[in-house]
Image 1 (cartoon, helix red, strand yellow):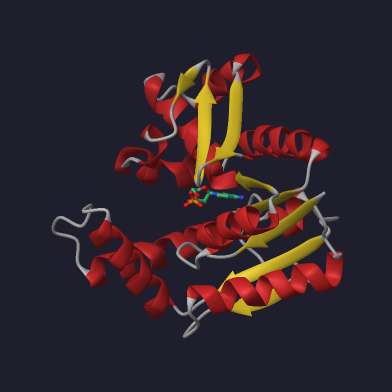
Image 2 (image 1 turned 120 degrees about the vertical axis):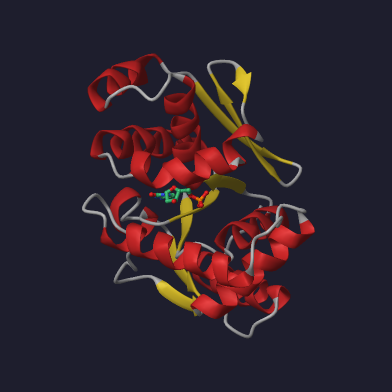
Length: 223
Ligand code: DC
């Protein structure tokens, strides 16, 4: 069974989905991390052209797990959990994620994974393209200003903010919104039956309780 949370970059989907997974003791699936893993592979293979890269995919051994607040990713036996978060991967991932054959590979991996447990997953197209029959669909949104402010604060906490201004973060988020919403393969889009949660002006605890109430009311989850 799967609960999906879609929404734009910086809307707080992944921190929210992880916290809900912890509180309800269900599994968490980070779909962006799988796109990042394939982007890492593409870079490590010296950025081959599309058809050569697609030939590598059937031989790829991908393993993911959620433990201790962390979504672990192993590629061909190597732990790339941290490596997929680097700037080089972040800059190329939108292009890799725009290839329909790559999206199919990622979608097949995720559909297969969720067969044997209860999952909450976050992404861009989960409610529309990947899991149209999800048990519950949430679409999280917040104003560009609020998303930029949160990302900027996160960057400062991680000490990854060297020279990066709030205006830079806002610009980057706005560009990613454009790319995610306008690509031809499975763009970021609210599913017709998704419940919208706008988190502008809400605390983290408020948004978590709101979503947990919706899950409990709709699914009567008991573990
Ligand atoms: O959530 P994230 O920033 O880690 O995602 C990385 C990239 O993957 C993001 O630029 C868009 C892409 N992505 C996607 O195309 N579809 C998804 N379901 C999840 C992520």
